[in-house]
Length: 246
Ligand code: ADP
Ligand code: MG
Image (cartoon, rainbow, N blue to C red; front, side, top):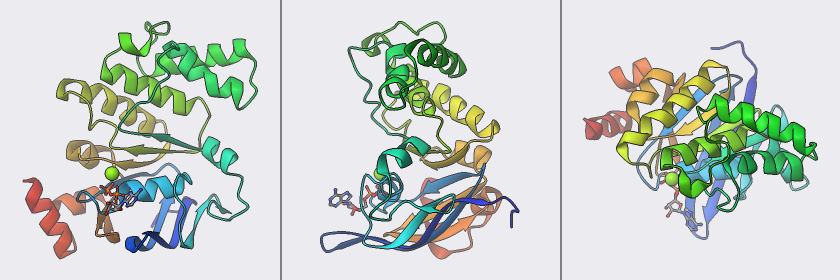
């Protein structure tokens, strides 16, 4: 057990798409500074779990809390919550007609009302942090997929989130570009960012995760430290999942 406070709490979370029960009584706690890697077969509910956390999807019962505040309450301030919870997707969705600097500084200016000069200065710092200090004036079309995804991470960080959600952010990248994005995420973890990371990159999971959460068929199957998970998963489904990776 860790003595750090829980930053994210999921309590008996249920989500349906029509008749389909996609998240089944999910109980999960993510501590401050924890890197929680979420794995599981396609269709097991990983993306839905992250999307509910950012209120891109609504849950039908249960509760998700951020630092004690119910995210899922009907009267929750969704805009404010999305500032506190950064999310990066498989597709980068950068604004094509804005430079890297423009993409990263836009929301702080428009949403947070930060003065333009200050927002641009901070965007420059963030782009340096993801290794793109020399690409601030490049447009997305001039950047590789790995560089675009790093801009997307910088853009999420620009809102000063308390937690970052990553949904298969390297899955659309050419293999040779995966490493540079994982490295940025590794750095973020080292700096103490609280992160929920859905990924198929088992090397990253083993090295960077504090906990591995395995989902299958909408259920949270097991949640263990990576050493234990990769050595000897506690559940049959964990062992099945692992055996398919080998
Ligand atoms: P994963 O990310 O683990 O692959 P998802 O969370 O995307 O899984 O999907 C979980 C289940 O929910 C799947 O059965 C999927 O078909 C279903 N699902 C996801 N999004 C929708 C949607 N918008 N409408 C209907 N069903 C959906
Ligand atoms: Mg998914």
